[in-house]
Length: 452
Image (cartoon, rainbow, N blue to C red; front, side, top):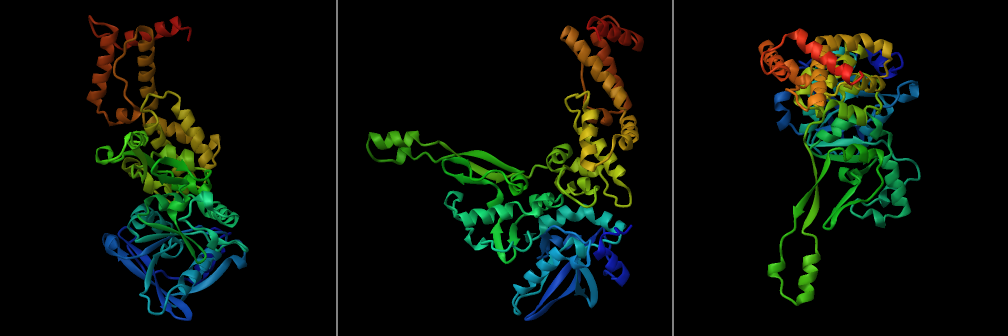
């Protein structure tokens, strides 16, 4: 279904633009940019099988789409002799990128989602989403495009190699502009940044290292915060970790008097070293931190994070743009219940639902049928009954059997579940195994004693 407010999509539908056909499950398109000297660059598509992506030299663009609600938001370029409508921010990038190419340069390959994926085909979008992590991970460089600089802004005064304490007022203003750009408020940039093997930040013709926005400096005497947290730092430093590294012991190599030796002993024996963690994230952690970021399609609040989630979660989620927001909520709720009950959290179903409703912008009346269906599928009530029983028994006598998480409960086979139930019965009666009735009666007595 075409968004009536997206004039670029409507223009491309009316013009009948034809993307070169691909198998969206096994290949992608890359935009080939051929420099033409003073003339505008020539654009064509090149099809690359996913298995060859690692050995292909290309750059991937990370940017905000921007609005397409008025004719002034739309610009037309030519791809393979066909007119193609794009939005202002992408037009500004292509213009700047092409102007920086020299006639003698080799053609450049770019991955740009608005161009390389047929946005008018929900089935192709659905098939290409799982490949985003691979595309951004294998790109030689990921370009973070912040747009054109604001007027009267002195970006040239911002030297990334100068300590923030030595920045001039003009450099501070430039950094504030860059680190508070609308770019950092978009859902999709989170995985594009965290998955990139190399990334540079571009604003007009100026280029900056991504590390400039991590909000930290690593020095020999420890980990220091150079700036207050900005929207950029919130994303860039998400997986930043600090470890202590022993300093070389030079005491035995020193020659000098007692003062030099005492000074050496007072120096730190460890120094802080920052590194980027590659441990995948949990869904609810990501939702809690980045769920408020913006996107046009609410379903992207789930699908836009798939690349940084753990493998088990990715297997449980199917990106499907042919189905509504409720389907995305259902998948997220299922994962949330399984991941959030590792410690036997009895009220997690309510907390999880409330958090996800806020993320997806859904009302309680819309999600309650979905919640009930998922809990029935996962046998939530039966698992919850076992948790309640074990907690009451442990609280009364300091004893308890085996409490399993909902995730583990789902993996157990019928016989294994019965083994757990029989193990619980042993705690009730050492002489014999009572039946279900005795166990329920014992639980009732315990509740009455506690005044429940």
